[in-house]
Amino acid sequence: MKRGTFKLIYLSMLICIGLVLHVIENMIPIPFLAPGAKLGLANIASLLTLYVFGLPDALLVSVLRPILGTLLGGSVSSLLFSLSGSIASTLVMWIAMKYFERYFSMVGISILGALAHNAAQTTVSALIINNVNMYIYLPVLSLLSLGTGIFVGLAANAAKDVLKSSAEASIKNLRG
View 1 (tube, rainbow, N blue to C red):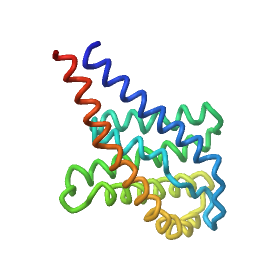
View 2 (view 1 turned 180 degrees about the horizontal axis):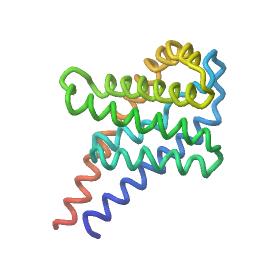
View 3 (view 1 turned 135 degrees about the vertical axis):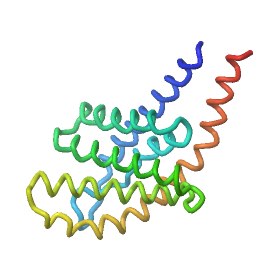
């Protein structure tokens, strides 16, 4: 197999992992004051892709996962929320990783991504219903972002080294 084939396999696995986490997350009821609050488990795949493969591939995962999740049982509005949050969080995590990694661990970068995700989804919500009062939920969602960002960051950090070494070993085997 060629190097590009291995990368494609790993990216496909990350998309599938994100998709499975997305589906599982949709089954978990979260009784809370803020509508649409979720754990953000699918962002583990985006964060891992960002660290192991870089921004272009992370954006690919961040776009394909919400689209496939919508095809498996979402609505057009859920696609708008999921896609906007996914892209915003990936971009913010990349900026933090590229320019501020010495100040933020993977957990800190994950928290920033969770904050960006919620800000983007709140903005989409405010635009759809044409009501800026949706931003009332942002402080509650931001507080939730701390917990979910920590969990996602810890999970991605635990899997990062295994994924990176596995990908490097696969590519090394190609060289003989």
